[in-house]
Image (cartoon, rainbow, N blue to C red; front, side, top):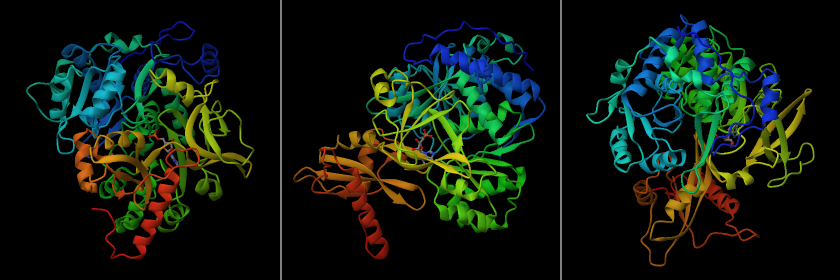
Length: 575
Ligand code: AMP
């Protein structure tokens, strides 16, 4: 196993185009407090790998890997990547990979090669990958050939032909034109990790690009830096008491920020075992719970909790190994928390967080008032929260709802290459304006927070966020549509789904959800972002300041849905 030597880097603010660095005195303070380690993320990971070499690092339904095996493959991937492609340290690589071991190896391998993973998803279409890759300047792509219906190699050819992507690595399938994952591993060597570029990564620079926002207009990319991202993982693992022997089951896409920051990295830094199912299918999860006996499921969206509750097999499965069942990603309804307690004997905790950084979690031993009604307290003693009047810099009175604004040792100071947008998205002193509405409470002596809505124009559909402006911009390209608004409609399973409210051109062809969807797919929108209901309206209602009143549209659609529920025979306008 590799010996890891910490290099010393010069102090002072790092200068990298597009990056808003932490002020030098803040960096120094985080290091002096022992929060930041002065080491890069891959150095920290390799050092953990040498300590826990023989322990189990990863389990999938296909196989399991010790730390020695997993990091050995990652080293081979790293040297193979540098050997077989034109990618060099500092370059960025797009990912279109599902929950398979090859994703973990490629992600770690990129870090060891000094190459920066961009945490895109296999569901992203050509247009989305193209926009994001160009914004970041990414030239590489790692894809999973057997994902979904297998369009990713074909999409990659389009990206290469258009000159956006130069190097493609294909896992789980063969192509004649791209480098195969197995070939890449075979060409790499695990013998000389000292020679790999990760030793030279400056911990103050970008390690990984996470996504926020849509892909029309300015992409919102969260640049996660080596030192803060490693701290994010360590502080989460410490808060939850993880160590070697802890088994963690992560049911959601691993490339999401939560997958990387709350599952993969904290597990590997603490010598724990990560169990990675290929999907959040309840049957597969219950099988893995039975066979691997996880102690922690660090992120369960309410929609998945409901599916578990509704599956009769859950009650027959021994769930007693699970000590921490943490609900997050969407607001938890109290009745779901109570059903979990009463029907499955599960004590829930809640977490809140985002790709930009900040996480909150309810303490394990807090009472139900805290665990069922709040998202708890921030992870780090250095995290700072202000509840501000939206768009302003003044705090609301204690206990009132305002915009949650956050700053701290693992929250970004600015989006990547977004100078103008950053002036609105961050306060002058570096607090990120989350767009979420929150309240501060003191319950049983604990200061904790509840999430009480949001002001940002996002639809929170299960685990995926849909940015309304992105979909609206593409809808407006349709020649029969003169105006459009995408709004959230409540949904028992996913929490929210998107409803497109359309104003048609006079004499325009009638549109259905299906015909609109077909059109949007031709515009390169990912399938999960397609509107799931269409309402044709005479005009869009305006607020008193002359903007489209989405609140009023949401209320209209909620009323319609309630009416349709009362009249089950009514067809509604889903088609
Ligand atoms: P992402 O960056 O994709 O992880 O999305 C972060 C956003 O998800 C937050 O800004 C919130 O709007 C939403 N979110 C995350 N956790 C929760 C939660 N526990 N309750 C309500 N909304 C949440």
